[in-house]
Length: 319
Image 1 (tube, rainbow, N blue to C red):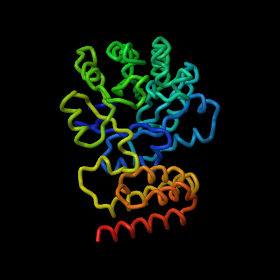
Image 2 (cartoon, rainbow, N blue to C red):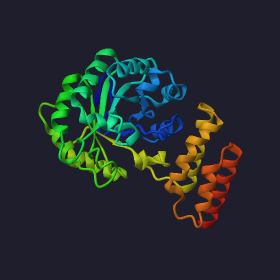
Image 3 (spheres, rainbow, N blue to C red):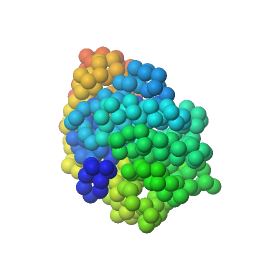
């Protein structure tokens, strides 16, 4: 499978772009453990154009995480074009257009999945961004706005005609948000369409590597993108078993990377979200107060002390 000149090999796994999740430390570790491509947190075109520093900071990427994509969202053609040009200066391997985010603060304002209610504008944005940059442009979207408007079959052809070089499809409508089960059948139908020549990437309800393997086998997609199942476990992509101790080491390394590459306060802020969500802590008795303490810790010493106590408790429980 290829996007532009990037060769991914067979059955690649991608880390989805996720707000407040795919920070640089997390991306670097996911890459180490087998992610074929990672994405930064998605960024607002409007904020980029207005030069909002917190948004500009999200464009920082490292050569060690390549290939890496940066995803932008917005609903204004000139802003999306200018944002794409700004993003291109950060030298990502892919610029992805977000037409799939369902959350109210994005879709409710007409951006993200909200674009599925204005297909002419969606296509115009796509065409103009493709014309404006040399970096490969890709799109991530959903099946449609709701169950009565499943439009992905026609939309995939239209997007390909706009010049995108890959399409990621989440197997839900915007109305579903993240509820119910992802439907991969329309994704498979797009992939089987003889008019479609670009890679089709499937997304939705991939909770394990076994799920990813089944998606490749059952639906014929070119790649699988994984999102929420990676929370707190950058080793998700690894096919080698890891001990609890090794997983704790990885989480602590993520903390160190984020502090070194961001700063202590924001590095901790990013990492403690992963710590709170990590399945490595499931089953520890009376863990609620410890989880609350992790979410409140705002210094490296405080968080390191909590993690050391967790390691001690896990060691004792394992005998």
